[in-house]
Length: 234
Image: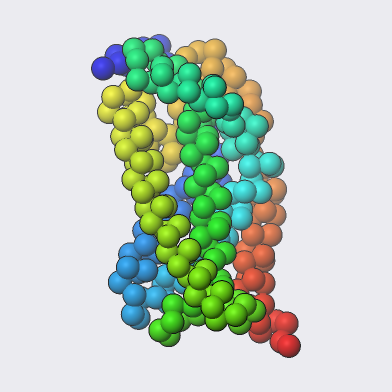
């Protein structure tokens, strides 16, 4: 077991938009997964949570280019070799502190975002062959819509597995590596060695106005997609 490192300094890492995105996604994914399994009258909540998830993911995909320093892809996307090296360190006795997402976590973020985006988009075109169809299902054939529904369900199962892996990884870091990752995603601060803490303090901060502009773009994009048939009547 790795001994906790002393002489760590609390430093701001996760901006408020990233934290709000994370916990909103946790709640909405739980609602979406549960309501999808129950079905029936709950399917309306499955659809609503799916639309909200699509909005959140759209926001985060854009925020990865214009957000705070450690929300940006350039800060956490590492080469496969770097990720493998970091993984070996995790399983050994070394403890490498990373300011933002570590090399493995960074790739998990990308995979989850892309799968969530794909999952939500497929839902817009899906048909469950019972009583529910996505708002854009009319623009594809019934056969295609049913096929997309099958893929929607498959990706949903993959996402459940990945979320399980993600939770296990977080618990590993919290219980074995003694990193307060859960606390950090609430208050935005991580305990870091002095040189990294200094770097984090001097990093690019998130712009409040830019954040609300991106939120507006994400909401508008999803609203247009969901209401497309009503807005652009044939």
